Image 1 (cartoon, rainbow, N blue to C red):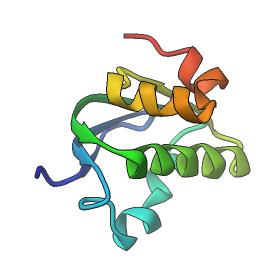
Image 2 (cartoon, rainbow, N blue to C red; image 1 turned 45 degrees about the vertical axis):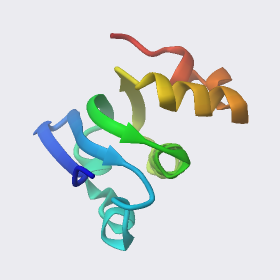
Image 3 (tube, rainbow, N blue to C red; image 1 turned 180 degrees about the vertical axis):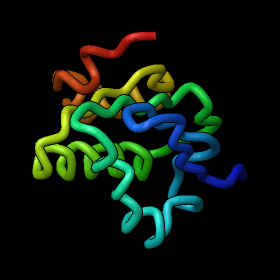
Length: 103
C-alpha cells in the first residue's frame, strides 16, 4: 500500500501520488479540499496513482461537487484505466470531467 499524497505543483496544477483506495482515503483527506480554492481553474494529474478502487472514484466525485459549489473549473488528466472502468460502470464517464481527459 502506498500512502496518498496531494501535491500542489502550482496554483492550478495538483498531482495525486500513491493509492486512491479505502485504505488511504481518510477523514483528513476528505477535509483537505482547500487546494481546490487555489485558482479558478484546477487540473488534477493522476499519472502517479498506483492503485485505486471505488473510494478513489467517490473522492473524485466529491472534488467535482466541491469545485462546482465554489465555481472552480476542475479537470483531470492521466486518469488510470482502472478509474475509467469504474466511471464507465457507474455512468460517470459521460461527464466532461472524464470525457475531456488529456494525456
